[in-house]
Length: 339
Image 1 (tube, rainbow, N blue to C red):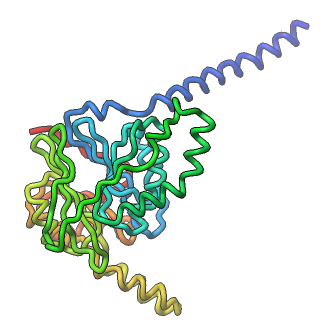
Image 2: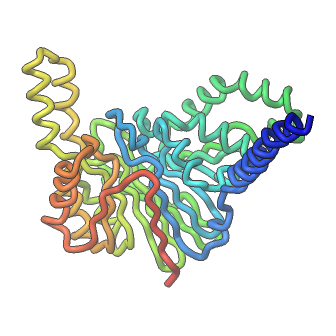
Image 3: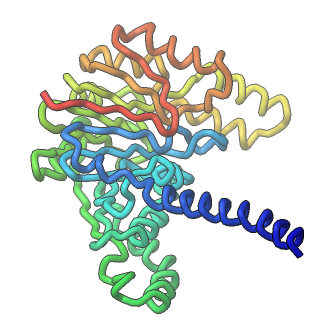
């Protein structure tokens, strides 16, 4: 009897220990969200998607988080990016809005998840959506697609937990006009000013970039663009320039390989891409001409999966830019203290 009791206790004690461990794990998981970033005096940038439409296990598609003055925004929300936002422990329930650069799928594919998951996390008003004309049908379409999900969650959890009025989007479209360097302030509150400006991604129009100014510090996000005088103009004196980059030499080799394999359609599509993107060398030229403090390369095509390709991106930019160059990776953070 005593042996049986001892055996039972011997089995029970580890189980109780496991339960305590599991309880602590659950608490840490629920408490991992870092809301302190909202109170920080710094202008903060988190890369939540540095990839492109090309599949990459390490990189989501285009998405950059910017936090300043208690405001938390995303610039673009490409496929896979919402998980990176969540894994960065950002306060998803406090997401205020998304600034869209253009309407390619690799920049808007996770808009529905950003809206839905931030609502689930506790957002108390519709998600603001900023960008050029064309946002309204996207917001309406996503609201239709996710409508059954909203109905189910409200019915299951109740209005108190999942207020229907907080679901969906609050759209703010701004038409900049045809001038290549046209710009407009699209957000100006609590000392944070956000400017939208045209970029050259033709034949894709409209296409825009954004500049965030906060307490003497600034960050510019290029969006997709070929080398653009508008980016130079609006990035002048910026502390941080987050700029797209495409390695044309590697893409050319991929095009040649596709032709050898008889993959003519793929060769055509890949061959068209470099014409409306920026090489690392050109991104360096933009940063140098604008006098920015730090160049961060993102939207990397093709995704650099080895040291040789990584070196090509960085060295290309350093050929023309004297400042600091960083090859962006998902999860990277930058913090700019007020001046």
